[in-house]
Image 1 (cartoon, helix red, strand yellow):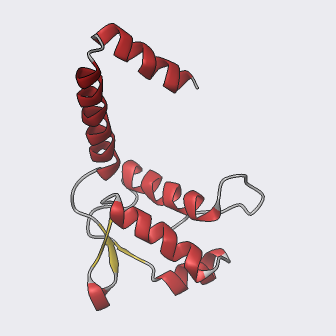
Image 2: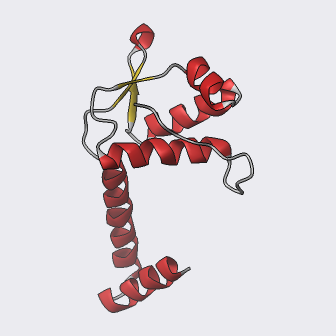
Length: 119
């Protein structure tokens, strides 16, 4: 069920690899709403990570709406659909509000987005 690999050789921090792995499994449907995820200690032991690393990933996933913690029952995949799309939608809405406040036209705003995506 919970097949995530964290590479200690990667330039990406382990907590971020874990966070992205869980998000990828939610998006692909491997982890569905209501699925209980391992405890911090259990997952840390499984992946060979420090418990604080897993706890940080879980906190960020909870802040993003991907995971919900139900006290002593544990942590579960949230039932709000694909929260990463919700976060992206809110970011896009905030960007549009900023662009409008600055008086930029749509073509200019889209050029900035394209430039940011192209890196």
